[in-house]
Image 1 (cartoon, rainbow, N blue to C red):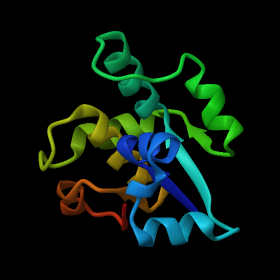
Image 2 (image 1 turned 45 degrees about the horizontal axis):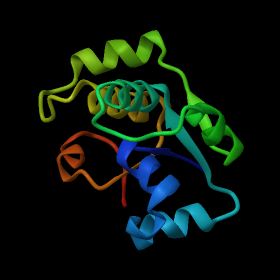
Image 3 (image 1 turned 90 degrees about the vertical axis):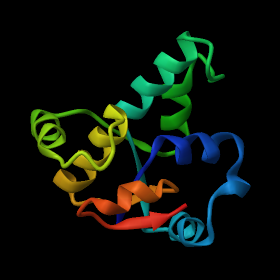
Length: 125
């Protein structure tokens, strides 16, 4: 099984793993669960880092791969789906991550309750 990490869950996994809820931790500890990180998360973190709103290491993409996470690129089908989503959530990065979860049929690990309004499986972080 693969699961897609929301951006804040990725940041928690890297710096504050104790913040991640029991359901998500159980999935991570399962040896057959693979974790996937959206390229949209890297884009969001890079923008916030450049604006001085977030601290993140310079080599974050390498660290993500070193930890065994897969990076999911943004495909045309993801972009098209993101544009067609209902406006339950206005954040473009979250909308892209939801679209990727839907297109790739991946459960989304998130703490953002608003994302549960979309048609996808949520693992509560």
